[in-house]
Length: 153
Image 1 (cartoon, rainbow, N blue to C red):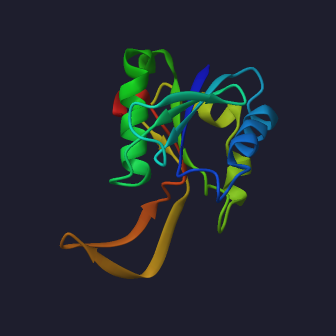
Image 2 (image 1 turned 120 degrees about the horizontal axis):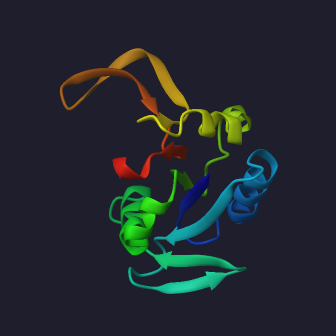
């Protein structure tokens, strides 16, 4: 199995240990999985390419925060995206607030559903629904750490 992590961040002033912590998470829970990590840094201009401690760094737009950073990284990866079983979309703040669910992500979990059309992540909720574009909502998938099938991107 092959997993690509696209880690969105805005420089290294906050969450400076995000890269090694993602690497540790994969080393601990994903034995036998090929893993590639790319940093989509929206503090760097789009088109910037570099390397940081052996990890590729792509400059990205900050217009839509992590979402445009991921879009720019996906575009930079291009057709190679199809060579992965999963794309792990993460932010440098992925360990903030409740994060015990991170220990549930393992080779067995993602491997068990890798042939399904699925998104894996933590669902947050509120007891009181709110309106989002006229639709009542009370639950959403946390965008700081999730797994998506490449075809869905």
